[in-house]
Image (cartoon, rainbow, N blue to C red; front, side, top):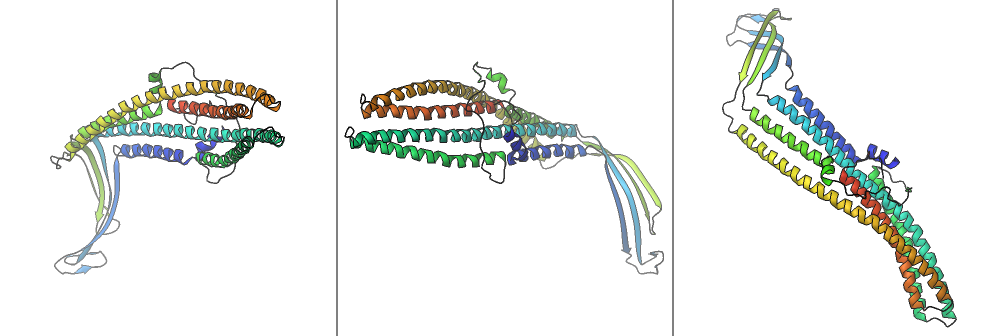
Length: 405
C-alpha cells in the first residue's frame, strides 16, 4: 500500500492524466461561457481636426474649424436567445469529453498499477533468487569438495572433477547475476513510484497468489465495466453530439442586445444614450464550411463507433487470455512444487549413494542438476503466477485504488 500511495501522488503519467482531465473540465466552462451574457465596458478619447481652419477654443476643447476632442464611455451587452440548440449540444459534447478524460485517467492508473506490481514482484523475486542461488552455490561447493576427495583418492576421474568445477563457476555466476539484477529492479520500481531520486529499497512480501479466480467469469459482463471500453463509449457519445452541433450550425442565431453611452466634448461626458433590441445572424454562404464540417463529424462518429466495437472485442479477448494465463500459472506453481519436492528427495538419496559408492558420478550429477533446475523453476513459476494475477486485474480495469493483491 505504501508503494501505491506514493505512485498515486508522484507518478508523472498519472499527473499528466489528471491535468488532461482538468483541461476537459475547463473546456466545458469555456463552452458554457458562450451562452452567458456578454458584457463589455468601453471608454474613449478622440481628437479630430477639421479640414477647414477656424478659431479654436482651448478651454472648451472645441472650435468651428479647428480640432475637437470627444469623450465617451459606456457599456454594451449581448445575450444569446437561440442558436438551433448548438450551444446545448456543445455542452453535452464537452461533458462526454470530461467523461472520456476521467476514464483515460482510470486507464492510466490501471496501466501504472500493472507496471508497479510487476516491478515490485520482479524485485521481490530477485531477492529470493539471490537466496536460492546462494543455496545452490553452497550445494555445488559441497559437491565439488566431495568429488575432489574421491578424485584425490583415485576413485573418480578428472572429467568429473572438471565438471564439478564448471558447475561451481556457473553457480557463482548466477549469484552475482542475481545480485546485479536487484539494482536493475530497484531502478524499475523507482521509476514506477514516480521518484526523481534513486534510493535502494527492499521489497517485503511473499511469492504467493492469494485468492485466484478459479471459476470462469462472464468476460462480456466484465468488459462493459472496464475504463478502456467506457472511454471509447464516451468518445462515441461525444462524437454524436459533435454531429448534432454541426447540424445546428445551419440555424440562425438570435441575440438580444443593449447598450448605454455617455458622450460629450468635455469631461466627464454627460450626454446619455441607450439602446435595446434584438438581432439575427444567418450566414447564407460560407464557402461550404458548414457542410464540410458536417461531413467530417459524420466520419468522426463512424470512426468512434468502429473504435468502440474493436475495443470491446479486444477487451473481451484480453480478459479471456489473461484469465487463462492466470489459471495456467497457478496450476504450474503446484506442478513445480511437487517436482521440487520429488527432486529434493531424489537428490538426498543420490548424494548418500554416491558417498558410499553405490552410484556413479554421471548418474548422481543428473539428479543434482534436476534438483537445482527444480528450485529455479519453482521460483520462476511463482513470479509468473503473481505477474499473471496483476495482468488479470489490469485487464479488468483495476486501478491503483484496487485494494487486493
